[in-house]
Length: 213
Image 1: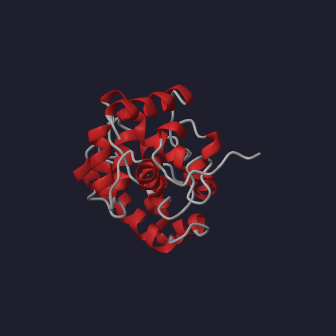
Image 2: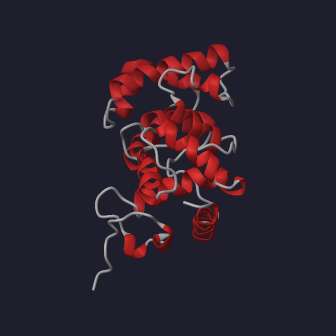
């Protein structure tokens, strides 16, 4: 895909959604960190349902640590893999208190030192909380990037690396959210909504769904 087409794609995303953001509900950096950890292999809607009560009870590392694993599990038991996530979150809270003055760190190395935080989660925090022009390649972005021809790759890191090379700098800050939302609502896994897609004519996907007659 050439540079002009890539620019057109992101110009259209920008026009359609000037101020994209995450659909996770949070009120501070710590809450977003916890929500992103919980969102692994879970939907944002499912996470938001669980965190309404959780964040009222424990909006800080100290208060969440005080819940303990068993207490935290009661709030997040509707979320997949909740036992391992509870263990990681409690360990993360302890580290945030002991090593980072209860603040979410603003660099990748420190973020990835936290239990349950990998490259994808770190990128979400760096982008959404600190405005870093990075892209967290989840299943949606991986699918959209490969399907459209924007950035083909066999691994999330390969796709991320290509996206960072091809996306013009002016669009990088919001690219993560545009691609996630496009994959979540338009370029869905089964039967993508090609007839209503705003970049349909720029997409290289060979099996586009047809207009309904």
